[in-house]
Length: 264
Image 1 (cartoon, helix red, strand yellow):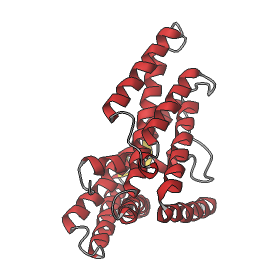
Image 2 (cartoon, helix red, strand yellow):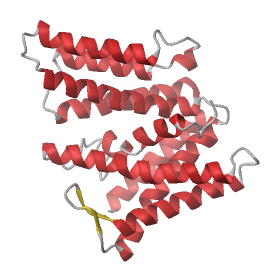
Image 3 (cartoon, helix red, strand yellow):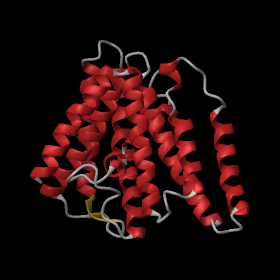
């Protein structure tokens, strides 16, 4: 627990410092995190990093998370076209390798590239919005307060297992504690936002951070259980890898954008 706490504090301070810095340096950090996350995903499914299909996945992640806005350039293709071309490339790999790379492996790589690439792209793009520091801090605070609320309420009052087949330590009481904590924190942000954020929108964002964030955590737990691993990586002592630490981020950030809870 001590190591986990120290790692969390140090990593949190450094990351929040990069959020304040913003611009190209912050976006490049997010791109590096996406590359590491995809590496963890590839290693988890047991594919060689020297495989050409792996590098197609890295290409897809790079295109999705590329710092277009800080560099002042437009994306090469609309998102839907990019995803379609990436899908076709992975399907063609099965042909060119004469099924040495199976359709199942190609599908997993496509899933990983989209899961990681789109998730981290929205994390980066949130900082580029007007008042991007506020919006990024709001979402991070909502996610982290949900985690804290779920942990402490679950420890104190948890009796009913939430989904024991996937994550045996999570409880319904803890999940509700996370929802309450994230909602309160989001409303506090609204109170001090100077009119930037309404209480209603804040409540929706808080609920999204808690509910969707906890679902993202369960998704991570589910596929790690399939592969029989505890952590996706070991980059962050006491926390695991990038995907372990950012499992909620990469679903919450896209979700609140899709609900148009953040300014366009």
